[in-house]
Image (cartoon, rainbow, N blue to C red; front, side):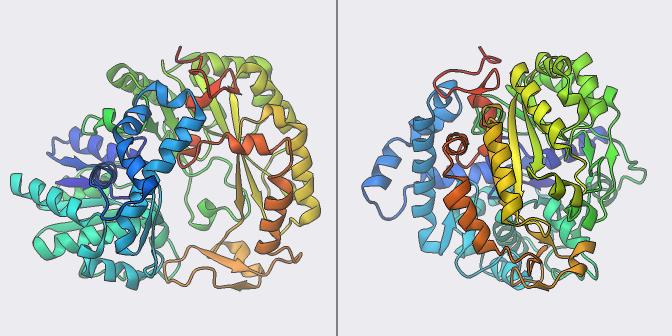
Length: 517
């Protein structure tokens, strides 16, 4: 069988979901192949000149080999100005290459001018005309080569992001037309969200043979004839991926120690709306998995994909470090207020923690049931800073309980702690369309599509999205203590590359990270 990671997603690390499928297939002795069509497809477009040129495009093409090499070595991360220029040049080449297809394309995004990823009819149209997709020359040649060399009975796609949807269905349409006898299976995070919508009805009958919600190991094994698949926590296998080709100075290994969220109380949480329960891999197995992966692949970074790394796992990592630098999401808890605990995290290899603070107003946090105390958050940021761990802080504006007054308290909190915050992610609230809280609001259509996961709503305090954007653009982002934090966020790759610009919890674009040197 063949497992495919479709365009477009950040091409800096291998896909963790397919890596787990590989491990399950290995365990049962089933032959398979892997195609990271995202990485291969982007590189193919970059290396084939666009039809039209201007000065910028010509310059970008001239510097292309150097730009690609810079991302795979530390020189590309020594100076953020050069890093940003490389990103802009690569995006320019992709933009010009896809322009004739009516597609806005970048290293992380795919947006068609008329077709939408949240309309099943548009996805079906993409499957009917795969030749219109800018990746068509690449995947036509690549898939034909793969299928000629080794006839296959089943091909699986892992669809996780909206930016992958149209390309996924274009590839499916091509396969269905050229090789109608092959069974096609479609899974991944986005498919899971679709299938867990109330009253879900499959609009892809006749095109896709099997849809899978949730972890795909057991369903895939059953399709391959394994009767007693079992629910085994397989460690990811990265042997089939081109680890040296990703946009990083060495292998980044993604790892999920759990699914769902151990807190699982926040209002408006998509995990709650989809009914996803929490399941954690035992800490001793996590440590053994990581040590095995580190010994085998010598990664520059481990990327924990958990919604929040559990406190018990954090303590286990402190006692048994994996042997490589790591980062991931963590909840702001009392443990992080302890300077000694933060120092232990640092010694274990932690270079950065992503923290979902959401708001700097205690009333908003309480109403959202975040379980965060602002005094603890303040202490945690200071302890992480002292330990040399960068804080990548996530803020969410426009929740139903927040208005301008509360948002300004968030502004004040960030300003007060600006020297403890390495990076910021600013988001405007989207309400899950099928969450329990949505029924309490006056909602209206957010995206015009039967596959939409979010809905717009009339803000009970009158703080509309235009007003939120105005506050962010004219007040929050322009504050002299906040603007420098926002400027140092790596464009496009954001938190995935942020650890490469960190030294002792500080942002130093002109030097290599201390944990590497």
